[in-house]
Length: 468
Image (cartoon, rainbow, N blue to C red):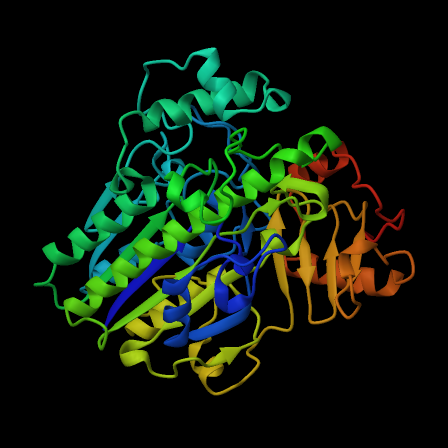
């Protein structure tokens, strides 16, 4: 059997039609929806650790990254992204290494430039890996530089500071000369992936990982995609503020949301071409295709734009997970079991009939889902820096690893995230913190606790302390 893993960075679950729609309106995703009709649909899938690199380390190894032991990375050639923002440890076997050793021909097609920075090794074990340059601040070009007039076009004056100007400067420089839709990032990634399929038809079995950084910001799309959602000609807006929106900034939000919607639709279109390629190559009856994301992104939700781990929120933490089995067996089946990124690794190895080369924290889940079982998890712990989040059927718990700054939301209420109910549910908070600690191996590294001590408590949190 062939296995294909497709990851769209920052694809919100509610941006995929089968899961509903984001607060600003439905997004046109016919290809994702058609794929969902032939897939097993998971409604409670979550990352294990965030953001970009920790998430991929969990997917690529099946091992927990939380609670970030020996993970205070400060490596040349990269910024300090977050705890765990570093390479895959040398002693952790990767999916590519294990499957390649088992006779799979493996390929990685990616424009996620963080994976290829100095000292990173996420391509380890692949028979072929292809890095497509130019996303975000990848130094793919050094000129020509943008004029102030061009910067003003792409970035509202209210958002201009040293960091945002440098960010937009590199992003747009990297895009110079890209005039056709095929020149944009998601099309290039999917086109290159289709080329890989053509070139490897002689393989007995393949493992292909397709990594599209789109629909991550900056939301740069051909105008016809944006105009599907907003026709007005107005100030362009393509990046997040990473903070609470000021009143004067809210006028730009509709344009930002239209660009996000347009980029998701572009990703959808080219994913459709990719699936059509599999059909033309007669691969759909012997190939498992997994479609997922690393995390989502807040686009004005609760007056915030960006992504963060504290306070955590469903639009960032809930991810799509659709698995099309060979021949579309069990098409349309839905499962509400808890699934995490590490479980995807275990599922791939189990489906391939390959034994893990070492310890693995993920658990195979596909058979349980097909049989309607709730699976082996009654909760998930999702880590971002020093602030883990524990999610059960009833509760959403978020605090710092020092046991302070507690937020608790009751998912059984109409508007769970309107107000924390931690103060009224002290015992629940203690029990959920105990789960976070247990999932961390019953302890946190001292450097992570020290980081939590330096960080401010989130607004609206409880004074309750649960660390004993």
